[in-house]
Length: 295
Image (cartoon, rainbow, N blue to C red; front, top):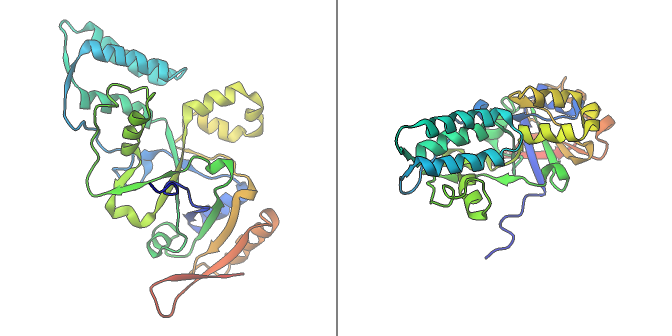
């Protein structure tokens, strides 16, 4: 087995429009998004299906529901939804047979609502990425040093031609105590269509409810990052955590960036990110490739 296959890249890149890139650099914050806002409707939204569809009786789901409530700690919003499910199960006049696929999708929807995601790429020279996310090559790409704590748990996206199917590990361990159950669940959050493979995506993820409880346990964080805490408290679709300037390794200016915008990026990098290098993209004369020249 290749022990290095799961190693993360030393640098990951965020393609942005000029306006968004300037805002990231000025505010030293970066946007994490609710998956419901993604341009891929399947992203974090693949229907969960067991390899062998099964029906389980209501007693099993009552026990499972209680386990999930414990797993969610103090998240009252998710608990309220689970309580409604539990009431239906308990009040049924007979021992219902419930389809496991349907139940899993209903319950895990609550967890999806809690996710906020930052998408990054392992490449800085993809023509499609520059075209799609950097506004036709007029934007920038920011290279982040992944040795910093902020990027400690980046996750590599898998690309498949078919949707994944679950085995039975997760249905027996929805509290994710076993590595196998956790890995099965991750397939549905970290698998995308083969059509998106050019993105070479890695992502950072955070849970809104976990962050909210962490802020409450450390009031000094609320004082230090009041705007971020307000976003978390309101469960905004977009939240903007602080990034330390030292993790910005390089800035890449698009080949079509407006000449009047170049000095705006250069000035802020030279003032706030003194260790970061600046490159300008240009198109190869002989190949369909983007190359870079340091400024």
